[in-house]
Image 1 (cartoon, rainbow, N blue to C red):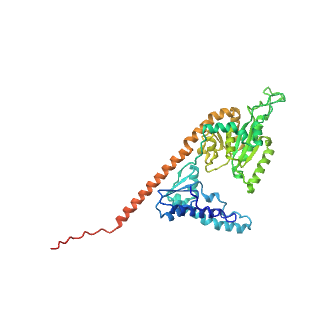
Image 2: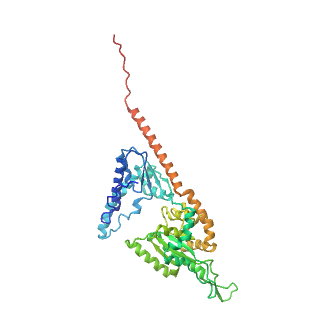
Image 3: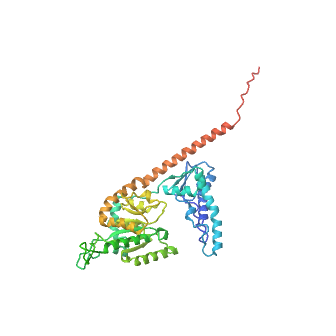
Length: 428
């Protein structure tokens, strides 16, 4: 692998990340053009690389652009307040900064010979956002991102060694046993483990998982009146195993939102009365991710309107069912009732699916729904599936580019004036 443009900064004093990304991509495009001739070029994420590639390669190679999501929707709004400046000045400067970048993104995206997006949901957002391109008839194709599918041996190793990988606070929660209905009742089996894997950002709505857990716990522990109508109250029989929740995800202590949101979630768990059932694992390693997937009965995926979301696919690859919000990418990666559950973004809806997992038991759920999820990912979201789909798109683009080249040559020949036949003169 050759890296170019890394010498350029990622930001300018913590700002201008989009502008710096354009500069780095332009440097990479220049290095690629100098490296030789190419049949096709794939540009990822930064649309501004497309015109640079065309300019430096003299339009000899077609460019496929993979648009994960419009950048102008991911950036703060133009009128947003810039930290450290008066509100009016920060808003004005941000608007001036973003306006040309947003215009360039649409124009540069439209300059690509082929455009792909990561889901049908994103394709709809693409049309609503890039209205000029939609008016020209530009319709991106859909290429789902891929996840690495672990082997059966790797899954078995993770299941056997998870205790030595996860920190003590998490392993203690997983291994704990709780009493049954009374002091003389035997302890229940090990808990049913639910896992949330998301960055510690408010837009991920991780608090939904905490509230749903509280609903499940209250349903298990609530007291009901005897059917006979008497006033005596008895405890509802304990569920097959007690539910617990592990909140894991990306965490940067330098980002105030990450720090604040982690504290907010800890306070929420205390208010909901489930602090002893929730463990936190920020900034986990790849090995710890494998361990979490090995012990999870199900993954709780709480973001709404996620343009794709790789976590449900990674979970399915490991044979873990997913309970996800019925919007955005999960509508395409999760088959409701077959590979997981798609529910409304409210605690009661999530709790209903979680209760089903608890009642059926983690082994039974993973052997049926988890196995179906793994087969679904292998067929549609594995790296071989991704490679085959991408190769087909590239071949189609190259063929179309070659066809346009032939048409251009024919048009130029048609525009040339006819060559007059010369009379032959015989000299004696």
